[in-house]
Length: 142
Image (cartoon, rainbow, N blue to C red; front, side, top):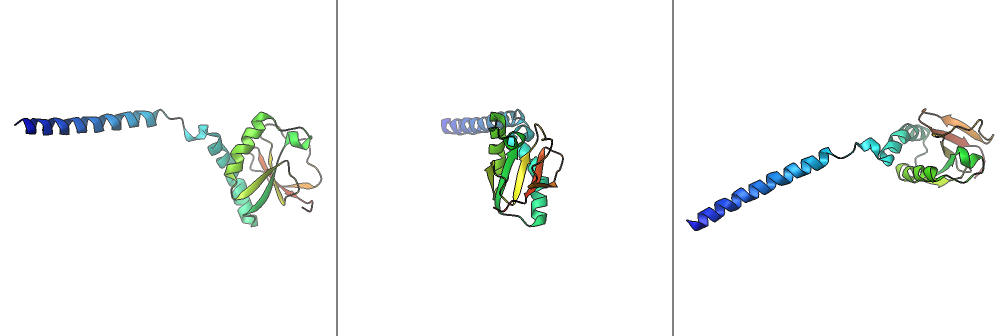
């Protein structure tokens, strides 16, 4: 009789613990922030139209320069720009994102904070999806 009571109590205890775990997990998941809060997810969405354009052109692997308005003026990257570049670095894989380089076949310009009044003559705009990222073609021989 005692063994039956212990088995029954064990079963009830295991079921109660399982329900408590499910409830705690559900509460944790429901309090997580939305995916769009993550900077990498934001830049994945911004990168997607440019990725499709590069895919359409046939440039799927290789070097991709990265510039900002500050780098066009010869200024060092700000901390915020460096953080954006780091997030973009993982988003553009298998392309190799090279900061402050304009001698690659294509250049990704991050004009999300400010747009320069004009581009250098050796950079030609290829595609602008309107989200701050602009795809440029470099006519400088690497």
